[in-house]
Image 1: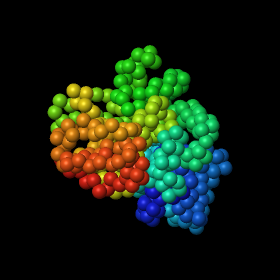
Image 2: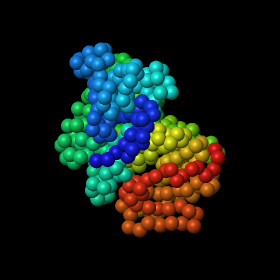
Image 3: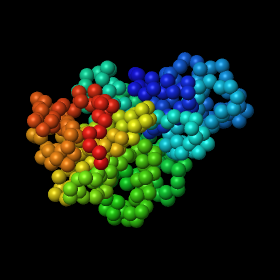
Length: 371
């Protein structure tokens, strides 16, 4: 299966070292090996590879050298193109940036989405599988609930019991596992550190630190509230979503919202990594409790508002309200099960979620109103 980042990475390899980061088992190594047929590969976890790297005995006559995970970046002497794949456990971007400033480009590889799998299966089947099993290649391609359950447990054990300890001592892995379980039930709502702290009998400062660690390990990502130029905006806690939509506990609407959040973040990371744009993902909420699930900003301008619902129930009352505060900003309501798409005089639309996500391309949204 082709990955959307492949042509952009291939083009950059002739100019820079490429650093490819992302969640564990999202396919970094597989993608690296798909780019060329003649490559040399090193994994610092293997003793014989560490010896070879210490001796600087890598090949110089191949098309690409791949450094897996605990990257050792040897830039001495003539060399082919270089690519480093690294999970978040090493803070690889920061470490590499310290030593190779100006000599590398970074890409963030996300799990599969509808854009990447639409050629392989029907959209509705792909949407159902992504919501049940997430987009990590192994469980998605296997397609089985039992396989996914076993994979999910193994994946979390590796991330928490190996990668987390590489980053920082947290004292109690079981408490972090409980925190993940609590966040799984609160996807789509602001994550109050004070509330989570009471549940876990920890300080809010500790909860914030643990959530930050989970972000650095690509388990969750945050969506922050947007408030500038929004009258009576209410500053609240960020929301947290999972890179693995299969983790989400709740109804279909909540899982679809997580899926949309992941697709939007993936697209925004592409705009930043491949095209150098400045992007953010927010949500909107005011003091009257009106809320829109997502606001995309591109180059510091509001570009698109998105509301997500599983079943048709008419246009959200909040979308028109916030449209008045963000004049000229397109708005769309994505619906999982929808009989007929609708457009309104205001420019707002109600569309089927699966086709919209399969053709998602935010490059056409340049941002319509300055912040």
